[in-house]
Image (cartoon, rainbow, N blue to C red; front, side, top):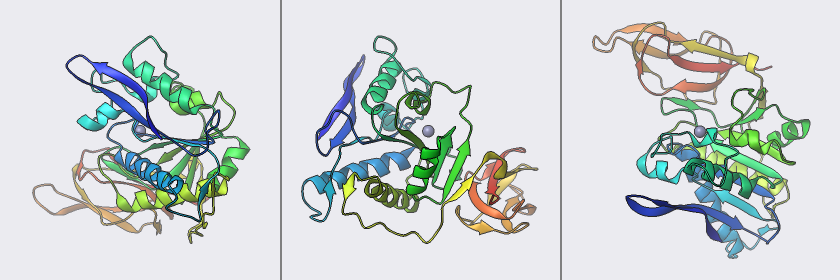
Length: 314
Ligand SMILES: [Zn+2]
C-alpha cells in the first residue's frame, strides 16, 4: 500500500505529498523502516528505495511464489520530495536542511512538520536505515555508517553485506539528525552512504538493492531469500584508519580508478593537469596501502580540496 506520509499545500502551486510505502502484514509498527532523500539531490538512495518498494509490492502480489513477507516494511523513498523536483539538497522554500530539523514538531515550520512525520512513522521499527550519498563532487564506496553504535548494531551492520562499515562517535554537535532522534528509541539504527549526489550510479544501486533484500532475509522479515555470498568481506574501519589526500595545486583532476579497490602505498591513482596548458602538474598517489573508499569526481580543483581517501585495514 502506498499512502501519503504528509500532504502539504503551497502558496503558488498545487499541493505536494511525501509518498510512503507500507508493505506486508499489518502490525502496530514496522519491523524495518527505510528512508532516503532527506537531501533532494541524493538520487542513489531514492532510486534504491523506490526499486525496493516495487520489488516488495511484487512479492506481496505473488509474483515471486518462493518469497513471503513475514513482517511489515515501511519505505519513504524521498523525504525532500520538493527538493527532488527542483534538484536541490535542501528544502527549496527556505533552504533548510531537513536532516537538521529532527525531532521536528507539529505546529512549526514545514520542514519541522516533515521531520516529525518521518520520525513518528519510523521510530518504533526494530531496524531503521537512512540512506545518503556524498556530495555531487565526491564519490563514496557503498558503506554502513555507525555513530556511537551498540554491540548489537555492530553485529547487524555485518548483515547488511556492504564492503565497508565506518564507525564514528556520535556527534555532540549534530543532535538534530534523524539518526540521532532514532537513537532515543529501542531498536537499531544505520546510515548508509552510497556513491555521489546528483546521479544514479547503477552499479552501486544494484549492489545496495541486493544487500537490502538479503538483509531483509537475514533479519527474518522476508522468507525464502537466497542469501548471496558476496566474495568480498566486510571491512570495519574506525576514524583513525582514514588517510586523505588534498590537492597541493589547483588544476584539473582526472582519475579512472574505482572506489572499492585495494591499492598499494604510492600507487598512482590520478593526475592533476594544468587546466589550460594540459601538462601533468601532479601525480596523485595512495598515501598508504588500503581500500580506496572515496574519490573526487568533479575535475576542477582548488588548492586544498579533498581528492581521495584510502582506509588502512585495521
Ligand atoms: Zn544526505
